[in-house]
Length: 418
Image 1 (cartoon, helix red, strand yellow):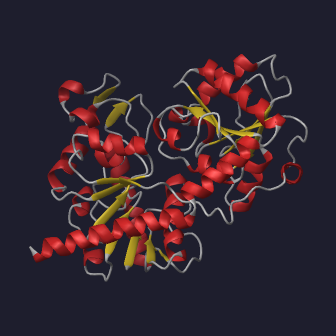
Image 2 (cartoon, helix red, strand yellow; image 1 turned 90 degrees about the horizontal axis):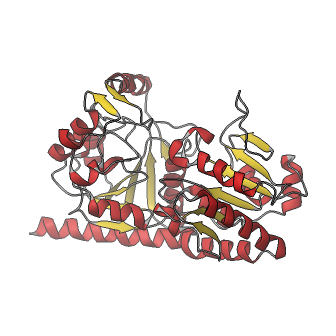
Image 3 (cartoon, helix red, strand yellow; image 1 turned 60 degrees about the vertical axis):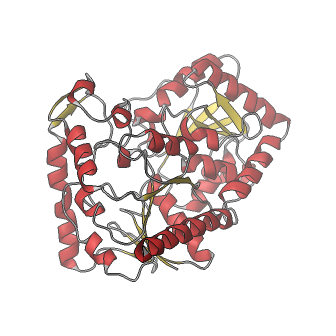
């Protein structure tokens, strides 16, 4: 079985890291998986980047047209948009390859155009890492147009100018005539696919993201704090997001509100933030904040999760964030809202706490309850570690993907014989 994994990057961002882990989980279990990327930054021989100077120059020229078009959309909803307009050679190259299955990941950063995505003749498995596939140009939807169809009558009031999302969605409807086999890491995102106007008739399977639980293991807390120069004897809450505190859907403002409720109850509490350096204007939280910047290697991240007493994920919208899986693998409980894919990570009051959606007071209750239980013993952390091994280890996830590949290959053979 030969699988070609197509993703924009395999290092930068949560989707990239998730795809890279799936790739190596498969290789570790006998699958001939090769990763093809537009952004190759290290020397992994199983990952192939742009070949030749011309290809690298063309790659740099792909983004400006999309950026220029995106600026025609006037919106106060500051989320990423990808119109995916510039043609590429990926569909022709992969159709001529010896791949049995083309496995798509996060390819929306102008790596492959919408028209090109409709030209694959080989079996396709597409793992969604956000909502872009069934939306317009937006990667995270805050309205219901993806469910109802994009029309002038349901355009949100915070948008004006060229309706980039409607135009992008209409191009998907036009070019994607053959359903692709969709995989989502969370049950929530699978439900979104089934409810979407574009993909509601497409096959969808839930397979979680993978983490190498043989490598991702707890490190002694005191040792981790000493290496990272973090306070030794105070409760530490850990928050992390690509872009740090600036991503609205990651809910840092909801965490701020929750911490207000804790003032006077846990006077020695401190917060650790990764994914961001200290801002020019200090954020007032009522508790000290330790900014540790971007952690680019797994060892540093393992130290960080192990140093924390608990991980906080106050997201409004999230798929199956790597931070939750990584924290659990390191024996660190998670406090999150009872929404989206976070429900698939936290076992309420067993591996952490799921607060009522967007209720900051209940989130504060969850923080207090989890910290109290951690101080009594590490039963929450032990249960979190056991959950990671059971659900997200390389062996578990690779078997699920192998079953998915075998099914789409068999279906393709059946279609050809008919």
